[in-house]
Image (cartoon, rainbow, N blue to C red; front, side, top):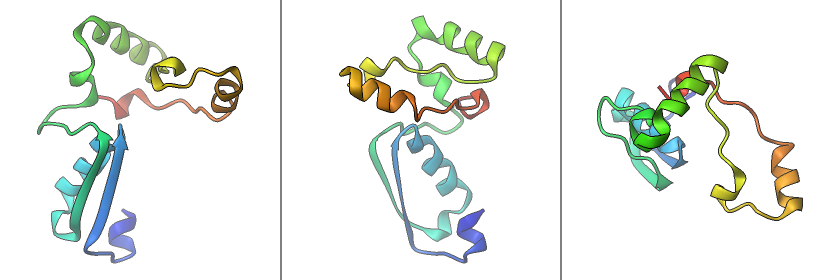
Length: 105
């Protein structure tokens, strides 16, 4: 882990959106090195839960099905993220990368 390899301490971890799950997990593993956690419009998970546990029940089965079939989490429609202009959609689309389904589960 970079934090340990670089011998960092008193660090401030900021998590936005899905990264709230990540910073919480890191803080759980190395609490003595973390000074502050900041969650900025982020998921703040309960102990033992994954992102799938927070997917709306009517969407959860489809989310899991796509993940198991493809190995990746489904892409969110950009309009749900507030990206609606054709130019912005094109710009974002060129930069999107698939995320492993295992990171959600």
